[in-house]
Amino acid sequence: MAEQSSLSHSATPLQSAMELDHAPAVPSLLNPASTRAPSKTPGPAPTPVQREQREKKDSLKKRESNPNGSSSSSNLGKRKANAAHAYPSPQRFNVPPPRSQDFEEPKEDIMVGHEPLPLMMPDGERQLYKPIDLAENKKGYRYQRAIADPLFPHKQFYRCTSPPPHYSRLSFEDADRWMHFSTNALITTNEKGWRMVRSNVCAREGTLYYEIKIHRGVPREGPVEQVANGPQPHVRFGFARREAPLDAPVGFDGYSYGITDIRFEPMHRSRPSKFFHAKKGKAKGAKAAAAVATPVVLAPEDQNITEGDVIGVELQLPSLSLHQKIVSGVYNPAVDIGDGFDHAISYLEPGAEEPLDIIRDRIPVPYKGNSYFEVLDHVPSRMMEVYTDRQTNLANIANIIPGSAASKDPLKQAPNPNHENASLRTLPHSALRIYKNGKLIGTAFENLLAFLPPASAPSKTMGAREGFDDGAVGYFPAISCFWGGVAEVNFGDTREGFWAPPAHLSQTHITASASRRQQSHGPAATNHNDVQMSGVDASGRKLGWNPGRQARAVGERYKEQVAEDVVWDVVDEVDFFMQDGGYEGKVGSGATDVAPTAGGRGRGVKEEE
Image (tube, rainbow, N blue to C red):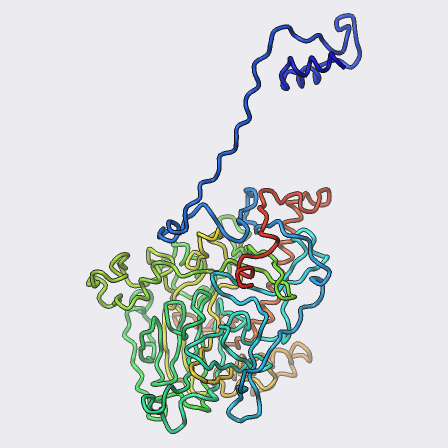
């Protein structure tokens, strides 16, 4: 025992380890003993233990003043990426194991009536309620319902889910807290200033259509003088991205495109415009873009959107493959002439484009008896703020007023598909058309802004990773109400269908029903009155039926999004399963460099409590 003690004090730990590792197990004539006598020569002094250098963190004032938003600190329990992989992979976080109640089906949303007087529909038969105890999208955070599933152990058991009702509707989480809804989540109102709500479905490509009916707004006899009678109810609607603020109307900034009820005007960047008819011709490329559109002169009965009117909103977007070229900076208008739906893409061919990958960095958090996925949401970019600034005149970019916000980071050119800033690149073959009571009014906007990353990006200061598409990036149907305005949406996925669909959308529904009858009963079941729709490309050539160009209801996106969530949940589980070593590995063994969260709670809901 004394000999071992002497060895431990006279020899360094490294020397002792080497001698013990190389000592023979059986003594021999050349090695009479398995241990050798300690050396009389004193060994070098052991090196002192170096303290790990502390990470230098910037102050709050310095982080807020940094225009690039870079900072060494981050929120949400110090979000850190996993170990470097050869392919993109979602993040994993050190969260506590799920509770028994996390495996239960999601609870229905709690809704309470307005106090002291209930908010009623104009007919007095239906009451509107306010949802409570929800994790609302705000402060750079976005929430989606989650549920624990024992079939997903490698992704920490949680997957996507949603509470009833299970169809396309207005989202309670993606609404301002002052918005009130009907029990079916299709009617909304607000008793205060402008507030907005987005739907639970988004448009990413193709042509999608929905309708809105005004129940309380501009009276049938015309606008009321607001000075004498106080504020009057109003409604605006259109499409909005995730960056658009919920405490502002649709069309407030560059992230939304709206239509006003008063004067029936398109609204974007808080600037009204006029409807127009796109000029049709055989010109291509830059010549087609430079074609002068014909302005629309509204009829006397169409000067305003009044109570009882049914407005159809149709959004047309190019294919995601063309969209990806634009945001990646490789779009060539001389080559990429069409909208991208005619080009069959095979990702297995050598030299083919990289497929669109969905990467979802989410952390499961409990809140008010429910489980949510907390996501660092997209935030407005600096160049978009300049684009939205009131002093920015796109018609005269060279003459910027000194001292304005636009003069600090001036725009060198108007938004276009090849703009130097990704957030200001536009989508060719995109448009927003408006119908009133089934009649086409005109085109409100063309060449809408791109939304795929990097055109949309989360906050850098909160530790989010950039450049990843989480599958929920796009244009959402959005409704904003002012001072008691009441509106009802119709996404077309009910048995009754739309209230006043345009002719081409009615024919599309006839074609779809004929296709279903033909699949179930054979070709003889096809009705002669069914109209077969044909896709038409940018040059006017008919190329047969094309689902990318065929106008369809926004409500069809709900089942598609459910299927997409299921697929990507399975893909994430397989990814983490392989990182953990496959069948020979251990659950969670591949989650290296994962930082703990603050008590297993997300920062957004913790601040809200």
